[in-house]
Image (cartoon, rainbow, N blue to C red; front, side, top):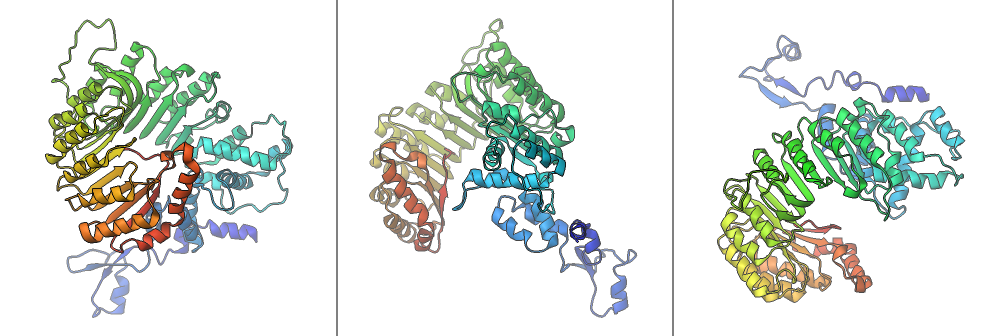
Length: 602
């Protein structure tokens, strides 16, 4: 009986609906035609689209149509669960999506922690294994039931995205719940991963982030076939040892990058960040980058150490110049002229992002290079649309970087440590920016009046559509009001991120002369729930009737550790009363409370 159910469940879809879903569209004929002619219209001889006929959608959609629609629901776990319960066809379409990246969708609920819920996924995987594979667990001291119901689906087959850290955490938690041999040296993670990888028909995303040393060694890719890795489109590896001493993981890292360079040549998104002191396999990493056919996104830190390797990296990067769209560098010492020249050849490059660099100096990375370079940047122009600069050290480096951008093309700019000198430079090099995010602190700009005046001077002549101002320290509200009062008429989206009282928020909004459509605010411990709702309603009804969207970001990292209990309770009050706030806010507004642990500047 069970065999019959399994067989019917996996029966080909076309055999179940061969008559009803043969085509999505059918020719329409006038009602004057006889039934015989109408029926004959489905024959191959009469199935033509003449100018006199019309197309009428069929009342029954094909499974292919449902599959396309469900692709848009792959992040909505609850809806996919509902789809599974509709009928057999919906179940076959939804299950592969629901189990394609189970560790990415796992979350905490009232009954279980994230680890507990992730371990339930491992239990489901184990139920899919063969009796011989399960016996290995039993031999190693695991309590597994001898009699169990084999699931209809082999869920491991649908694995497309692997979060290695979450997978290891889930296996470790599952081991604690099911193993009675605490002193066992059996590497459960390695064995579980080998079984899961062996069944999947192909990974699309592989993530090695926040991995412990022993966990990194457990996930061995050497057993994977080229078929499993050939479809990989996204790979991320971030490795920074958590201990003061460094375990030698060179062989492990070397194996990972060597196998990927051999099998995964169709990566679209590649992110690498490795501590220099871990002796990363530089040659294998360069080989992986060079082996790609159409790499579009590359995010990397300076994992190399000597100038010769910097020059080699630039040469490797040039092999992807025709396809790169997004390029991010973090923790780099300086930007050599070789890199600038490569960036100039990346004609599809849209976004350039720097997360921490000390110097921009147009000098060769090779000390023996004979040609001299000066500070004349006229010969260098980067045709990028988006520039993000975070954790910059000196204003002069940002100014030099802005001078390299093509002033007509740059549309989006985000600067984390904005100074008066940088703001003044924007008027020269960035006249066409439509999306601007500025962040400053008292230590960077102690003179609030001069900073405010510089920002106002830029805003008056700008054509911004979105502007975000972020201040980490106490900032004079009067200067913020002055800045908001000069925002251009083109602005449609305004974001404010600093400690604001309700009175301050009201006075700032009151001085705004532009009808913005979207208002983005970040939670301040000075805000009261009811007062906040009253101010938003007042602003949308009296001051700006065109306001349509309001977003309030709740971020725990903004909280002061010295008074964390009081502030956390205040944040939780907003979270728990989310539905109440949405009901109290003006019905014409789309109000949203967003939980983001780390708010991006842009």
